[in-house]
Image (cartoon, rainbow, N blue to C red; front, side, top):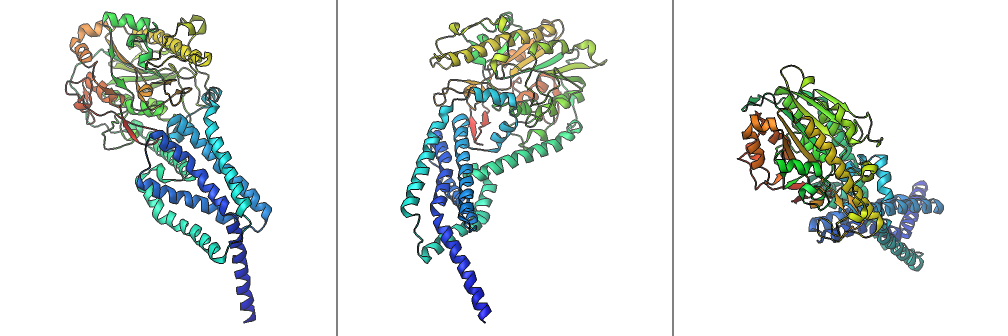
Length: 580
């Protein structure tokens, strides 16, 4: 009996000491809770809305859980110095997450999501270095001030009341309150997070973990589907138009925005070759096209496969690739690229390329090597009918570096036609052009890169001008260039009108117009339609008269049956769909 009493006393003593340590950490737990709130609050302010009821409930419970877990664990250690070290490490980690997500809210109007994870994984060292060089560190001033206020508040509270031991009731209630967050998180919050997949139901730690693991899981699933990409069953193929002898080329540009191009109305004459082709009628400009995503992999994976927004499957790799379908339809398909051959985050594009009969890269490089060749180096690698197997027509995809950042690397400086002094007084959106040398220099580089792109693309047109040929040029996405008043120093990808507005143009050679005037008329009739690029594969097949079970005339923007009232919905970085 004496042994049992001693044991009970010992257990009670341990629990009592633990509760005392836990109670002494109450302001530490409060600090962790407040550190997690800031970025979400900043996001809601940027969105101009209050959080929904479900977001308030589930996110608050998540924040409470992730304030409680470190506190409950740290209180287990009896050594004061060890508790201080663990507290410092935890505060550092949570402070880092606050700064990181504040940066995401500023740059992408989003907290951390799987879309953000994909963009980070797809960023190579060269891009990261260029981005950091041009980063405006003022974005961190307010979050750092918030950290200072929170640290000062916690210090003051600890100095004033930190030494209080509290009553047994208070210590017990604090322990029970923290402990109960764990089952609530497991059995209430987590199911809600899974059912909605809303990152606004999560704490920062959960957003980082779930966003990253979801992105990696998707990549692994993509690899599984990619292994069978060339064996995709496209079903029966019907040819409804005789296009024998016609070469078809798709030129994929990069980061090109149409209202920075003279042929679309920009004041500086940076597209002289395309201007002249428009005047002769050889080149048809489409006036209202947007990309289906604001980043390369998202856009090209949708435009070069039979994925559509309305499709039953929501992943592009569950649909056949355009090169595969046309190969099965009798074309010799060839993909030539000045971009990377492989790399984490960009793998969808090489996967699409691999469905072609033949592929070629200007330089064999991965996402870690950003020393791209000039786009003119791709010209000697272009195919023509003399290289295709007998009896087959050519379908070719040409993937350029275009105007990818840094813009200064995308043109030959010795031949640059424009200087900063020639820039228009206003930006394409009507806002005044920046007056500082740095931003003006970046804009000038962008304008000159478009001029260089005009030279390269026009040489591709010229390459196929002597035979019946259709050459379609479009950019993967647009580009935000200092127009956003909330981010005046930002230029890059953006889910906005600027970030999605792209050129779409179709070159019809004189021989094509002579042999197939009805095709040319069909192209001209479509130039004013509202278009999103997830319909590109479907529309190209429709124009060529290649019909499969995936074809839909209402989603063929060259067809007279096209649904011009179709909603153009694009997923933003926060996972929400926005209409453009």
